[in-house]
Image (cartoon, rainbow, N blue to C red; front, side, top):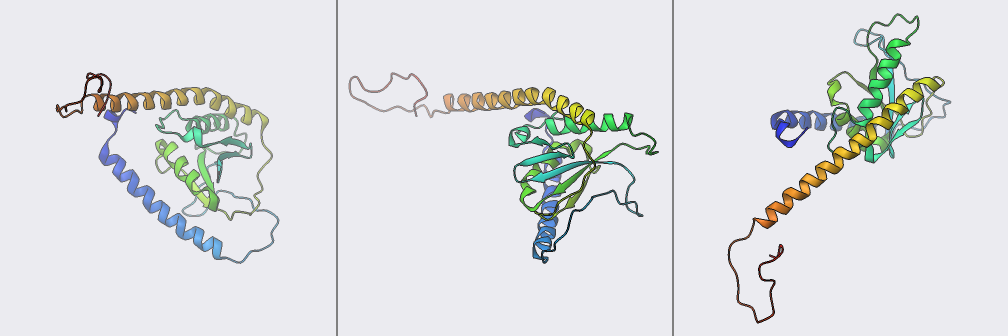
Length: 222
């Protein structure tokens, strides 16, 4: 979105929500880190089917220190994939849509009648990646979940589906050049805007200089 299309009040509300989420996450992570270490084999994260749970199939997104991973495919998104501006066709959102469409068509006989949803698995070192992912998937609104996991806890996922991995990677291959173009364009417009400000920001005053000194008014001198 261009700067003119952004709603300041909406952005303030989103920022307030992210700050509240950050405080909650930091509190829970502090609790996780204070727990005594236990030797375990591995854990499996599954949807909670209780009163306030869901039977929707999750799309696992593991947030780590070096970015976000689609799991169990192991497809990695790094810092460049989350550079601003993040439009609705950003790499992470495009990958999720590709997986969601594939899973809707190939859910087999599970009987699910609702769309898959993003489930963010947050390691303590992946807090920044979590915030970046939240911005990237804001078009989902509240249609996502998250789970905090200790840094060294191994997770047990189903074996990766090669076709799903291919579909996801193809979506990223299409989205990344488009996203990089948008980022470069935004930086170019920002630079031009700053240049215009510098060119028109003079105060109209001059000063006396010796012969051969000065630049005769050329350039962007102060």
